[in-house]
Amino acid sequence: MATDKLFTVAGTSALNGVTKVRFANDQMRVKVLAKSGHTDINLVELPEAMTKLDAVKFIKNLDEFTNVVEQVAIADYLDRKDEAPAKVVAKVVAKAKTAPVKAKTKAAPKAPKVDTSAMEDAPF
Image: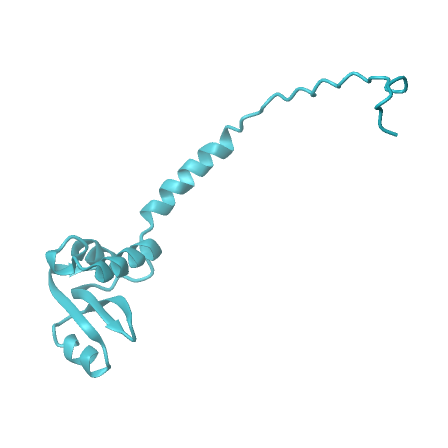
């Protein structure tokens, strides 16, 4: 992770129709977001100081964030920042590269040549 900062408040807000995950260290952030033009501001106090990734994983299952738009914003954040799924994919790809499957190929049998010169309906 790029930063070790800890936050005590996390949630979502929308600006210009785009909902994103937001982080802060106190509830006063609501006023700053509202003053900046944010709408649908939904911030909650975390039980303890957390990193951004841990905070998003925590709020993902809260009743306050059951709205589809909020869940999409949370899922987008996790897709971009969560490193665990990338490691699982890398392991699967690495295993596939270490044990290549060699397929035996046989040449297709050649069709026998037919002499069509004696046939009336033969093509030119």
